[in-house]
Each structure stands twice: as C-alpha cells, then as structure tokens.
Length: 125
Image (tube, rainbow, N blue to C red; front, side):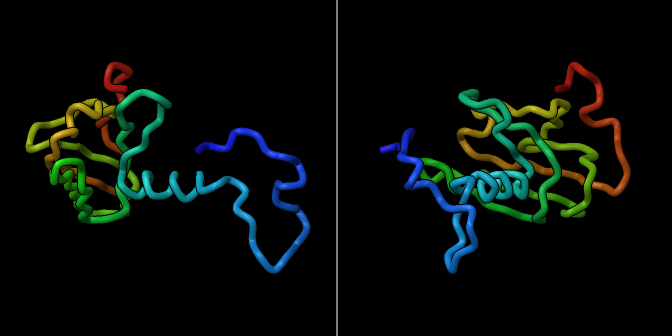
C-alpha cells in the first residue's frame, strides 16, 4: 500500500533527535544508485533511461527470467562519455529505450576527462 496522505503529527520533526529522519523517503539514495550505474529513468512513466557516466568499471544487473544487463566502463569515474555501445553496436543517442535492454546484453561506456562530441547534436537527445 502506498501512503499518499498522512497526519501532520506523523511527519518527522525538524528538531534534532537521536534518530535521523529520512525526509525524502529514499529518493536521494535511489538517485545515487541510478547515477552510479550511468542510467537514469528521467521521464516518469516512460520506460527508458538517459545515459551518463558510470562510477564503476563493471556492474551486472539481474533482470527477469535470469537475464543480465552488464555495464562496462573504461576509465570509470571519469566525467565525460566518449562513446557508448550496446552489444557492440554504437549508440549515438543519450537515451536508451528499455526495450533495447529488456532481454539483457552489455552496455559498454568509454569515458574520458575531456568533453567529446558524443550526444551533442540535438537529434541525439
């Protein structure tokens, strides 16, 4: 059950206490996990992800039916995406539809310390 309404008395207090309250109900933690993967579900209710630079050199995500999505990043932690490939095929768009990764596969990011032309043209966003 999703709680959409609550009494004001049940909200966390702004006064200091022994127990830290989670004001954003995990939204910041969720954002960090997605950002660290190099994926972000930017548009609510639209199945897809904006691509960005992953923090890890290798991640395996377990999908339904035992399938896996592997994310590999050369120079992990670098700021700028130089290029991205899905199963060896170059991606020019900064958006990837969920149907492209639904059955698993490998996303390969090449990262660098300087901006590149990847994702710059407006048609790639």
